[in-house]
Image 1 (tube, rainbow, N blue to C red):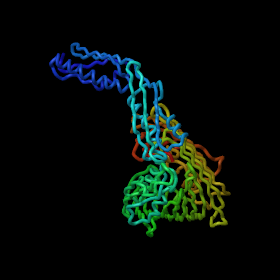
Image 2: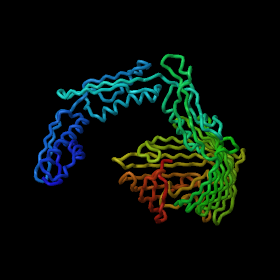
Image 3: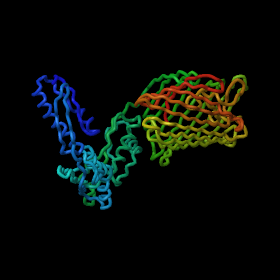
Image 4: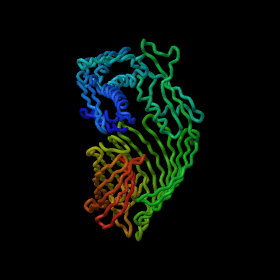
Length: 552
């Protein structure tokens, strides 16, 4: 036998691959000693591995041939579960006790595997820990194996501990803010049944704010005399410990967009504006085609709603249309179940100068609503589900607007999984501004199309109504898109797509401009980054587009 012989394992699939990974040939050139040691170690290793898969009576033969060690394994009968006893002790209602016992996943006649046995014991425990019983524990478990009959008798016992209800919030670590700020993010009601999800939701909500560098939320030990009046019931306070962030932050950024060109930005963030825990975000963003100065104040949430207000000054020069505008707005973000709602009251005045056309000004006081429903498997990298959005708003001459109008817009995006990694994405947009004409209506309430995440193959906002040498917004919009993305691995993919769309001032004048092409995809931490090369049929040009390809 050579110093390093090849090991061949003969065993039924998939056991052969499992065993081969853990068997190593002897490195000694001493034939008899090496073979004896290898055979002894191999039998022990194989027996232990097979036992984890439910084979407890294997036959193992090890032989040496020139240049090779041959291991022949007959695993024998696989052990199956014969009986299951699930004992749950503690102050549970009979109905829940029965439901938990029925949730035991390793049932009679199923193969006994060590991994399945370990996981099964945790299933019931997790359900106890998640609701009502945070101190539940697994107190006993046994799997009695009978090799002769190849059966396993399973027995588990749990102790639920006392049923727990929430007590008051106990907040520590604050120096700048009032405890009321923390309570605004909490949906925990004292006296309500304990749910681990409520604790995690509070921790995640606080950690997502700019106020705190770190957050820890958990149950505190009950005070003496505060364990509840009923036997088996305890009232546990909720401990919230935070570490505050600095009150002021200045940040800088730079980038490039295929829509508006290179950009740079400076942002000031104050998280204790007027010493009320209000968030002030102010910034200057300079892009090649657009410049913006803004300031927004966000108030802490109240229940499932959050209010903000702000001001904006903006200039842009896109497709021959130069616009200057100022705006004041008050916004309310509010969840309605699974629907995200946004309601905006805005006053704005803009001056438009189309190239080779007359200058005009538009003033409007508008009230708008936007509702978004997301039903996808992954917000940053969806493969299944849909996102739907609907917007409605408008203004009136009777209320500080130059024109009576109502704007309606809807967008729908659906994701279909294909094979193991791939995905088909379908997208559609429809918009209509109901008004006698577009005169007096700010450009924000009209429609243009083209560019990344619109109709690829055409310049940003190049599809619309021609006025002079410029492209301005129209009262109607229609866009459709289909894309197939193939992922080569967990990070890189490629996509092929076709888009079509147009914006016009008359529905009958809509003429769909078609663009198609292909691109690369990279899964960045913020979502898939798309770089596309697209051909626009209408003007016969190739264009490069890049964007963050996430569900809107």
